[in-house]
Length: 178
Image (cartoon, rainbow, N blue to C red; front, top):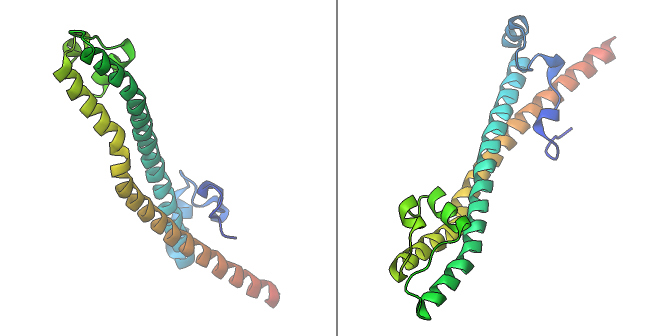
C-alpha cells in the first residue's frame, strides 16, 4: 500500500473527507479524531509538496531548454566570429539569435538589430556561453532542492501509511470482535 511509484493524487483519501472543498462537518470530525487529523495533515503536506514540485520542475525544464538553445546558438556565433577574423568589418545577427539575445536580456533591441563588431560579438558569446554552462552550475542546487522535496514527501508518505496501517488494524479488531 505504498504509493511511491504513482501520482500522489491516486493515494486513497479517507471517505473523501480530505478532498478539496470538503464540508466543514467532515473537517470538524477530523479534528476530533487524532487518526483522521493526522491523515488530513499528511494529505495536506503531500498536496503542498506536489504543487512545489510541479513549480520546480517547470522552472528546471525552462532553464534546461534555455541552456540547450544557448548551446545551439554558440555554433552560429563561432561562425560569425570566423567571418570577422577573415576580414569582414561587421556582421548582423540572424533573426532567431537576435530574438534570443533580446528575450534573455543579453543585448538591447537596438544593439542586437545593428551591425556587430568583434568586441560586441565576443561579449555576446561570453554571455551565451555562461547561459549554456549555467545549467550545470545550478544542477547542484537543484539536486539539493529535489532531495529536500523527496525527504518531505517520504515523511508525509510514512505518516500517511502509518495511519492507514493503524486504521486497518482497528478495522481488523472491530471485524474480529463481531
